[in-house]
Image (cartoon, rainbow, N blue to C red; front, side, top):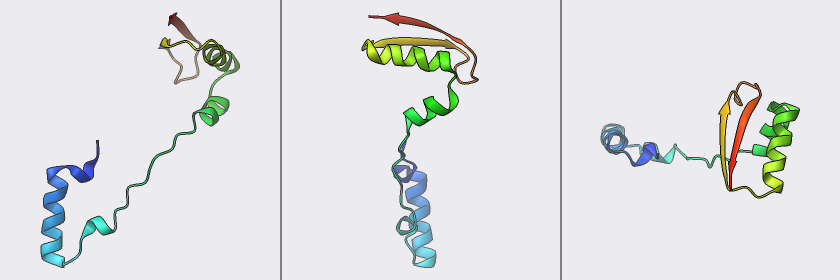
Length: 82
């Protein structure tokens, strides 16, 4: 969701420009977010989790259901549907 396209932002932008003569959109430059998944996997996953993900990538699996505590670093169960 882009907050800069919301009606509330547009309204506040107009009011600020009318009152102060400054367009706040000029100062707000949305930056693209680039997520480095490989760095995340190498830094935060345990060895067993990395091995499972590498196995998934090698076999070009298309549907993966993860359940358990992958976010907390616990071992997780993996069900693969081909």
